Amino acid sequence: MNLPSIRVVFVLLPHSLVLDWAGPAEALRIANQQLRADGQPERFRIEFVSPDPAAVGSVGVTLAGLSPLPTRWDGPAWIVLVGLPGDTISTAGSQAQALLRWLRSLRFERDRLELVTICAGALLAAHAGALAGRRATTHHHHLDELRRVEPRCEVVANRVFVIDPPLYSSAGVTTGIDLMLHRIAESCGEALAAQVAQTMVVALRRGPHDPELSPFLAYRNHLHPALHRVQDAVSEEPQAEWTVPRMAEVAHTSARHLTRLFVEHAGVAPLAYLRRLRLATAQLALQSGANVTRAAELSGFGSDTQLRRAWHQFGLAGSPSDAQR
Image 1 (cartoon, rainbow, N blue to C red):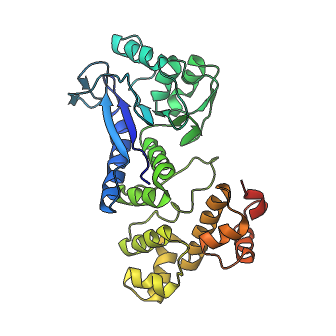
Image 2 (cartoon, rainbow, N blue to C red):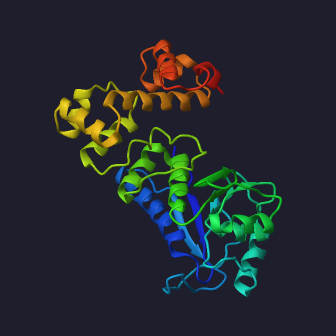
Image 3 (cartoon, one colour):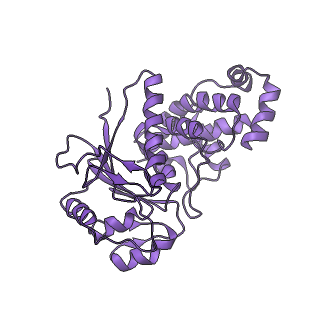
């Protein structure tokens, strides 16, 4: 069954920071491109809207043919607010006021109409009252400003992005790409997000207080194409009967050389990488309601005992039974 497409609406004001919207939009475009290459339908419908049909970006380029602010919604959608230059964010202009009126007319709801803020886009959301009672972050230069504009918002510092559905906020500029990769992973799977990151040559990051990187996305901060090819294959089917020689066949190299490549470029041995992916797959299965036996089967572990052993080997809290939904 095909999943519904997601309408992603980038809202642009005069002087909107180009990198705030261009990077995330490229991540979505590449995700669609990869889905088409895999014989699947595109998932994201990208739009650029503004109170006026044209807007000058932060670097002086004029963007024309922008659509008006939408008033009808025909399925799941993300509203993306991006940052503006300046020490503070002014909403005094007519276009900013039109944007705020439009935002106040919207009802954000998880999996239906969600709000994504990049950099100082969080300030626009705050002026519209959309951050009251929410956790959010923004560029570190605007953290105090955000607290002043919306004292009912729990402003989180020193984070790359903060998730509080239906609100998703990022700290700024390149972290918008990190957040969009996270959203792609949520919507289309971790393996696709890893492929998009690889294509964009993005080193995925998280804030120092966030959970550890997803194992599907970790160990990918390198540029070795053969190793990425193996990691893509293992990520797509972690439950398959993988051995180092079989991985080496995918890489078109020897098993010994592949082990050297993993250690040198990924910082992990191939079978340890496989066990970590299988453990992550088991965690997802448990969170989806599978029992421990079924989770072990779906993830490629030979038994409950092997799953429990890996659980403790990688230092996860509690036990697999505790993670069942």
